[in-house]
Image (cartoon, rainbow, N blue to C red; front, side):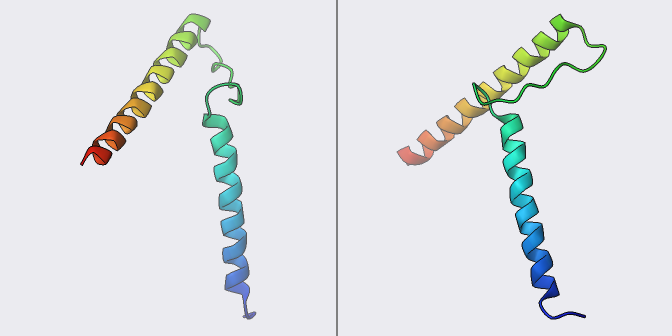
Length: 76
C-alpha cells in the first residue's frame, strides 16, 4: 500500500464535496442568480405555477422562522 494514499483520497473527497455543495447552492438560490428548472413533463403550466408558489411560500416561512429564532436567542 502506498504511503499517503489515504490522505490523497481524503483530499480528493473533500474537494469533490466542496464542488457538489457549491453547485447545489446555485440550484437552490432564489432571485436573479437562481437556476431555472422547467416543470416536469406532463405537468400542466398552472399546476407547475401553483407548486412553485407553494415552494416560495414555504421558503419564506422557513426564513421568517429562522429570523424569529435568532431574535429570540438574542433577547435572552
